[in-house]
Image (spheres, rainbow, N blue to C red):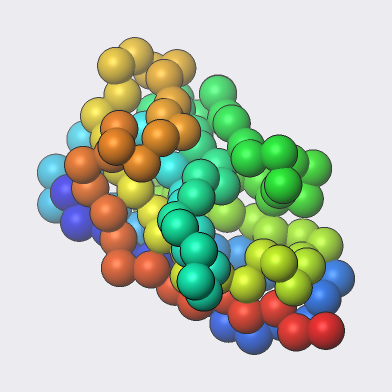
Length: 126
């Protein structure tokens, strides 16, 4: 499966952005999906994840209550709605995919994902 992330850009603190991750290739809708980010000078970290069914989600503590992950299996696309953005959210955001063990499985560790997109830059200004 190939992943294409988009939707990044420059936004003021307190604003919102929605990232998209479109999957192509072997898209049989059996992939759990995740978003990770890497800020300048820092290691890549987990942001959010969603199960194949979409019924189960997980979030990093730093984004819980502000970010929402969702998916549209008919469009083979996963979204990350980011609200109340802070300067510390500035990073390159990556989407990742991995066949789910079950329809309700999602993964929060980078090593659990075999497929990665190219990343989209989000810059939050003061």
